[in-house]
Image 1: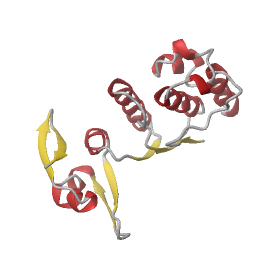
Image 2: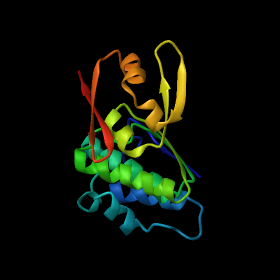
Image 3: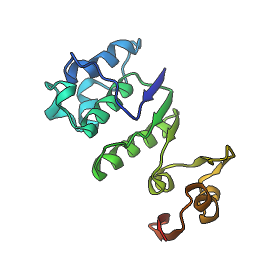
Image 4: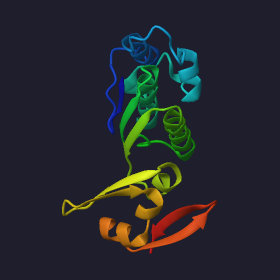
Amino acid sequence: AIGFVFQETHLFPHLSVAANIAYGLKRSGRRRQEFSLDQVVGILDLGGLLARAPGTLSGGERQRVSIATALTQQPTIWLADEPTNHLDLHHQVAVMELLNQQADNGAAVFMCLHDLNLAARWCDHLLLLYPDGELCFGPAPAMLVPEALERLYDQKLVVAQVNGAPVFVPG
């Protein structure tokens, strides 16, 4: 199965949060579920939202429901466009840890990130897409260098090391 996480969420507006997540469980087609509904709800901190309609949720809450729905389908491939979009720091870390765990368990995780610090902390390979159409792909340490990133973002950067990972700030 392929799990899609879009930058803008695609939830069923007429269904509750619980029903949206359960829809993913039904659509997975797997007899044995790796995650129960309760586990998914716990992992993504959705317990207080289950009875609500998507239209009453914040952007970050909708994003977590979308990720929960994808998770229930037990994808072997994740395609995620800005999966941390609209999330506060705590939930950004939780989502990145979840996706990292999925990769550790054998899933292929491809994501688009504009946050250099999340990419530096969580990604093992990067594909940089330059405005002129040039593509550069390689291991994260080789790609996360000011020369490559300043040209990509047209922005001077300062790099510091924090807990063994580079942290980028505008220079």
